[in-house]
Each structure stands twice: as C-alpha cells, then as structure tokens.
Length: 83
Image 1: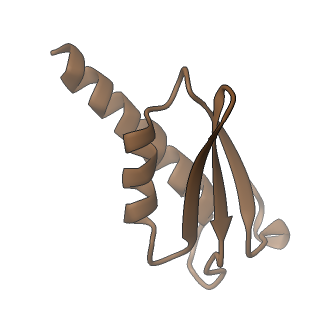
Image 2: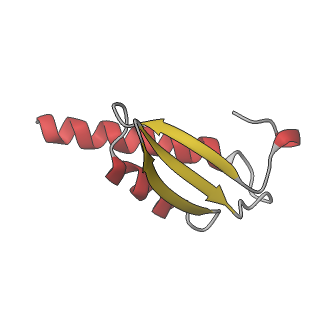
C-alpha cells in the first residue's frame, strides 16, 4: 500500500490472471467509479488496470481498496461457482 505522502493521481495495477477473475475486477472498478477512472486490459498473464483521476481527497488508499475488492469479489465468484 502507498502512504499518504506518496499518493498520486494515477496508477497502474497488474493482477495475475491465475488469481483474479476479470468480472470481479470490473465489478470492483464499478464500485470505486466515484473515486477514480478504471480501464482494464489483458496483457499476457495479467489484467492491467490503468487507474486515473484518483480522488486524493478521500480518506484512505483508493488503489489498495480497489485491489482488496477485486480479490474479495474473485473469492466470492469462485466460491459460488464451486458450490
């Protein structure tokens, strides 16, 4: 995670395709759409998320929270798929 002093208005996040489900990533992006712009693309073994226009006035780390939601959404989707 980034500290408040190192926060930037944009970031690039790489999420490994073996660990994340694309639909879970896009769902997390929709959840955080009020706080930043998100563009998801595939690059080899990764989903690459370009995060832009990050609202630096919100309390907390938007990028880290987005990643947490993407992982949680993936776990929920995989669990319900296996049930």
